[in-house]
Image 1 (cartoon, rainbow, N blue to C red):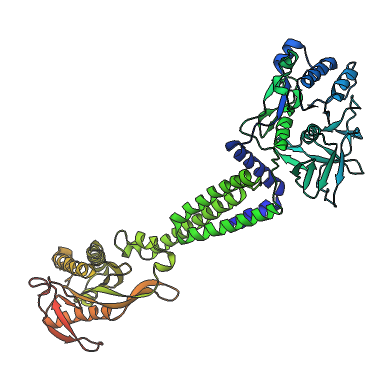
Image 2 (cartoon, one colour):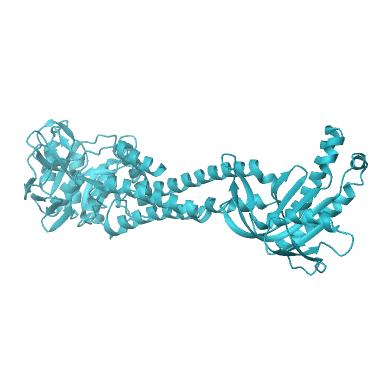
Length: 584
């Protein structure tokens, strides 16, 4: 039930589930970074030190042109400005000329204007574009002749960059900055778009349905070179690389949380995205993943609950193991197949299913314990209730045929005592007497099956059997006899004419279980209980306090004969409980 609620909530509140999935995926990516060859990408950053030494931002466009020219002269494969240049400035022609002499592009943000001429996108077949980001247009650029690409970074936490977006009512397609600079480096003017695939010349990339590239941080990040170092002629790292130029100075660059770190400038996000696309690494969500993950959460939760129900302790450990294994499987899918599987929902389903079932089992056990203790735990020896509760619920008190030893006691002349003496005095003495008998039974591990007036019926071998139940029954009978003989010599017992205690001990098969209609109580039924009752009656006839049948024990004296017992067929071989003193 708990797993079903979780799975339903994940589908009903999909945005919240997506946020949790993305955060968990971030942790997986950061814990086990992607291993990749050194990417042909370089980030050139305007740092805080550059602003201190060369002047505040924004820099003159001529200086930016000089940075571009130096990188171009150093052999950069392509250059992208991750800078929004919306306002015209005096040095724009110089910067535009520098960019036109090299495969390059500039950043564009969303706005009302149509994009400048640049990339063409040829659609092969009829690819579904409905999930691509839709924007009305772009902001006007101060460099209208430079090729532009979209530099939008959506979300409170930067996890994605656009690969492809729709612009305007005619659904004109515009690549994102990272994809655009890769295309410029490859010399591609026309992007080929198929269903689920984007081709840049010979370079083929999977295209997510939403057109967004999920960032996956590498173990070795893109190298960063300061713009000041470029202006000083330190440009050796630029040869053959895709170069992105931007600002990282904290006082000028908007810093936002991202999968790369808590304070990340746009430049580093775009540079890592370009490196990821250059490596062809595009993580994808499988089709129908949300429904599949909700179903997995439900099934794992049901499995965990079933295992915990069957084996409570090991089952809960198994549920925890399932909850741990699922994120590992999600990590394997990401690292081996670039598949984005939710690491949390199915794991939470497994854990929740197991914990909920464990909690339900604990509640059931507490109720059963209360029921057990309230109904007849006082009739059980120490520890037996706990042993019963350790059994599966279906096996605790189920009816069963079992061999037991029964001890039955009866007080001679008790009816006369009741008629001839004050009831309060009789009850006081009776309670003290019964307490002693009960203590003798429980001390030997017997179960007090019932109290009937002055009589006690004790069972050895049910509801839990032991190998020495017969010996325990004999030991309990002897202890009862010793106690009873000592008790009737007490002054309060003598005062009301307390009689001797007759004891019958018999062994045999009985039916043990809960009986009683609407007032269930645990009881035994069968010949052994009846024989024990007849033996204590026979004791009066043969002049013995305690008689035994059905038990072979070296401590018992020889039989005193075979007797037909009232209500039973055949004869029973009967022994006294002891050679001298007891029963004589």
